[in-house]
Image (cartoon, rainbow, N blue to C red; front, top):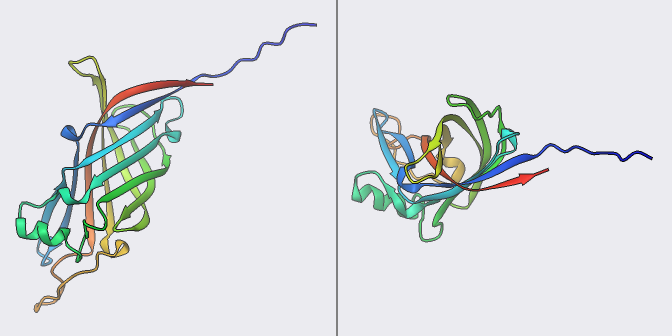
Length: 195
């Protein structure tokens, strides 16, 4: 009887940690319906698990400290941290966890979609990030890094952020639509071979 040899395809899943010093989580909203006000969150952490053979099987998890909001106005930041908006005492984190990744490759310039659950102020909604691979490379300390950018648009009312003020001239003080823009740099932590 002949021995049967089974062959398996080995896949590599690499774990990458977000580098907060080189990651930007920014947002913008229309103010008085005439200009855009921009802000950012400084406290960002999380990880990516990248499946190099099947990028669509990769995973993303991000945590953002709500108290780290910064719009370059102390009064406005204090209001955004209050119960009217983020209520940071009760809800110290915004989280995002991917559910699926569509159309992903690992070539620089490739665009793809990350579909996941965004939780703000205890409310979870599915959000689609339009993402792009910005590049990969070795850093001066022997580590491997990768960069991604992403954008999304959400309605803040979906997350219980309903405070607003009507304007005498019509419209409202703060738009309901919030634009999100991400620049994310990650550092490879480990690689696991499966198969």
